[in-house]
Amino acid sequence: MKTIPRIYYIALVLFALVMAALIGGHTLFSPESLAGLGMLPLAIGDTDFGDLTKMLEKQGQAFEEFKGRYDNRFKTLENELNDVLKKGNRPPAGGDSRGDSPEHKKAFDQYVRQGVDSGLADLQRKAMNSGSDPDGGYFVLPEMDRTIDRIAPTVSAMYRLANVKTISKAAYEKLVKTAGMAMRRVADGSGGGETTEPKFSKVTIGVSTGEVEPWVNNETLEDAEIDLSADLADEAGIAFAEGAGAEFINGDGVAKARGILSYTNVANSSYTWGNVGYIVSGKSAAFSSVAPADTISNLVASLPVKYRQGSAFLMNDATLNTVKQMKDGTGKYYLWQPDPTAPFGGRLLGYPVEVDDNMPTIAAGSYSIAFGNFERGYTIVNRTGTTLIRDNITSKGITKFNFRRRFGGGITHFEAIKLMKFATS
Image: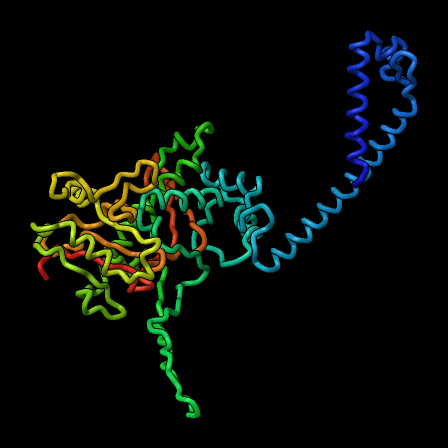
């Protein structure tokens, strides 16, 4: 390792000598050396550089030997690491768990464009380190899966806010502490007793299959200039995100995600675990006529302090527009704080506001505003892998691409989410 600084030092010396030769009018290379294409020794004036050149050659050879020896060693270590990761069902170093190999990409593209799947099943089976083969079709390329996942947060506000988990089984289970232990005082010299035991609730979120089916003209499949995989991934990603986003708000949980508005809602003063607490606006289908902004402050106060850091408001654009128009006694807009530099729309009472048009418009008895720490309160669960089935039979001149993925969602901590009900009680 010490040879490298010496090389830099020698190079610096050579550079200085060259500059001196140029400034002093010396000829760095003699005609004989130029004719011999680098014949040694080199000379500047009467100075002999034969020994220095030999030293440079030796240093260069030593460095090349060092580089070759350690390049081989690093390659060996990388192979050994990948073998260990493969045995442990972990992604190989620098790649996706299902592989991004050129052979895989070529085989998959051939399947998408021509319906030829020769060898694709074997390539996918070799690339997979965990899970099982899909029931039908083929797993999409890893970059397509990443595109679908990347689109979801840009379309669905709940996808941005919630806790997102990826699993390889049929359901996600979590134990949530609903009550902690209580301390007891023990008098001097007396025996201790049992403190109150903590209470837990088991939350289970199942995953169900959702599908989307972009259609493509057969002529388009023949156009090699089109990045077909990217186009299909974009279309599928948008469709999945829109459908899932609606479920995360209003889904009933029957073979789909269960939305935040589909649970039993109770007045926050009567809140119990398993329900979602709400406060009222003070008027049916509207904010209170007197001090309407107070109800928004009440909504924030209804959430326990321990959840407020990282919390956000959730409402549709029409509701937000109503909130923006709230004024103080002098006629100034004071509640809404625009923030054009943020990924969300702005702030209310210092908390971000996320716009999700799946939230209901203000109406009699509607739950049109949610406030909470959604990352702690709501969990989205994705089953590993998106599958693709190609169908060019059922419609002439058209090829259908049936994408399927399994996902679900539900509240995992009921204390962390509160609602505003537009009613008097």
